[in-house]
Length: 265
Image 1 (cartoon, rainbow, N blue to C red):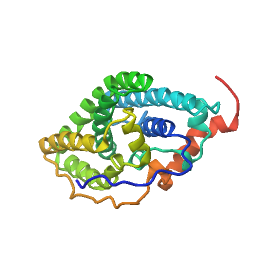
Image 2: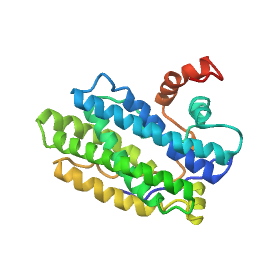
Image 3: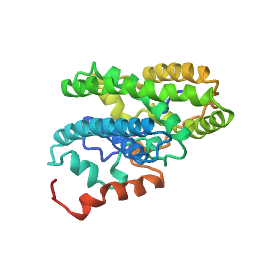
Image 4: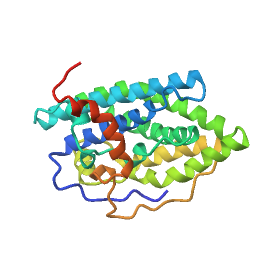
């Protein structure tokens, strides 16, 4: 894969740590909501329960990260306000996690690519100079390691399974691969956090991620697509530029909180 690109950070960013925490939390919040859509629709009962549990793990991680983001921001917003009262342009998740679920092969392929990214990132964040972030990362890492074993096993089953399962998961990889450079594209926020020893060098993580992904893909008899260049200056979800799918997702996710402002359950 080509080297990650560098894009300018949004000038309106309140502070680098707040932005970083939003990115970490929003990835997990949005993907957790997407996975929850499988509840009652899984291919087998055991997998239906597994996907629901992974969704709960991700939303729990998002809760911790967004709660800390609200504290860092210092504007009186808690994790609920950040989850339910922001507009799509204020979300900082990568675009891959907001895509519709598609078929089971697409969901698993996306989950696998994100799970490997999550494991290498959280492992690095356990060494963060920010003690609370390091503690959150250590807790989330235990869950992420289970997640990657689950999605990795399914990649092997689907890729080296029937002709139909192989075709579907290969098609999913082909569609998703163009979104992966965004995971490692860096901007001023990343540079500031790396210099403060709060976040890792994404370029180093990119190499680890690709090696782990390629190992499973090869054993699954699948083929990674050709490298997709990420042109310098192209903005994505980290800067609030999303696909049209995020707006529809948020409309469903936020409707109760917006319909009953201030309500508590």
